[in-house]
Length: 265
Image (cartoon, rainbow, N blue to C red; front, side, top):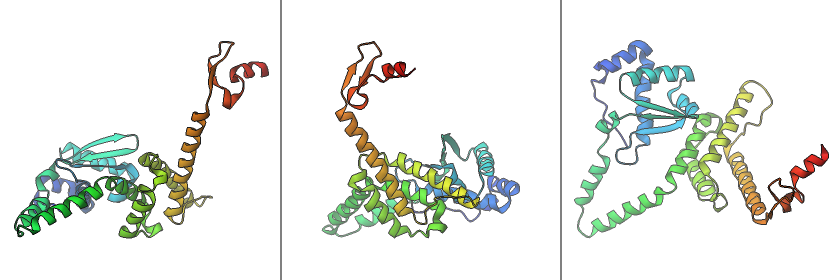
């Protein structure tokens, strides 16, 4: 979604008035900020939700965790949103956005139909190619990018240049194809958050001055571990212990580890 309707009399709505009464002007601002964040993720028909780590929601809405959940609870009680928390991932759904969403795609299609007959196929093919090009890697790039945003000031991020780096060096890197990028990127982000807390507390830390080397080294290490595990599995020779302890890998252990343990005891 590129934009949504914001009526000039929105402040007169009872829901908005109640938000301002309880949370002052910050309540009003956070509501529209919340809609903006969700709207940016609306890339499929009928989609009206966004999922991010809780710490990232706090960053988006400039609020601490307890106030975030109190604020969302008030909005949910009014029937404006639905929330779902799984592990540390918070999903917020706002059906209202489907009512006030833009007409960008509809207007774009209308404009294309007005073009001369010979130009129309070229325009349609160009649009399809761009959509196909971004279909596979777009979500992964957004995922990694969103993990960076909480440290935007420390790392001085550049939207275009850094997203292009993520696309070329991370998402499309053949070394990382076998990895679960979402899983390992979130683990890296959790490690960064721990180092950031140590840094704020004045303790010894390894908070990276830039994200590029840090993330690259993290994923490189995970790819090497995965390769080592696969190599080890390929070489494994499983045999059954004659003493009834069960199967064990003869290549890795040589002798039954349970039998050896009993000998030591």
